[in-house]
Length: 297
Image (cartoon, rainbow, N blue to C red; front, side, top):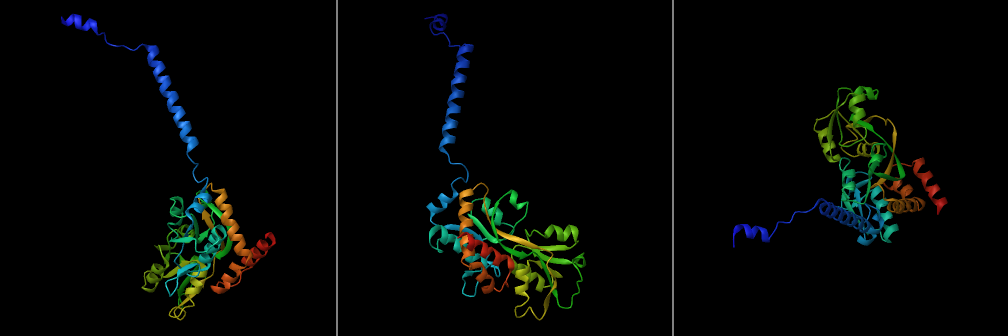
């Protein structure tokens, strides 16, 4: 057989323009249909967080373990504190047991990151309510009003006003909502750390002139042996900050469940008792919240 006859016997297939268009149209319709089915079959992000938490059988809460009196480890190695008890109360309301909870230690600089990465379900870690934070997480009902920031200094130091910290080395916490004001408005030179133990160590070893930090924590620290004779609260708080829990955006049912647990704890007097138990002093805000919660029960 000649080469010419071989070519003629098996002519090459050449698709027409119409067949190409039909093939492309068919592929496109198949892809769209597949995408629709996949979307219908996939759960919306965070839509059923409460259900997933219940299926897991425990609440995972981000908590401070170095922040007296809100969350810290006591002399027996047990995690205790004002917000630790609140988190347990929320777990009890959801699961029927306060032991249905796992605590994950967080600090100011990573608590929101941990939440949005899915490592924790909720934050109970001295979370101050701010507009910027509200853009990336949802807040629970506010359950405490914290003295935003006070200044601890050696007893012989003289500070007449917050303007006097200009040019001073001030120890503080990474992620604290007052850091920008301390530097940009008041002109302090901040020396920042992730944990309170590091802050106190730096202060005692002379790495900073004073500490600017949350009022409840410093007021308790300055009353301790070894501190009360050497240090003082040199400047009172600038303002008060509402404290709340935090959950991921777009989890309305889970947020409602957490708020329900907070409200029941308030109505039962848990937070009023917690203020006394942890030497926070009595506040009108917590007492008023308790009365309002009782009226809703």
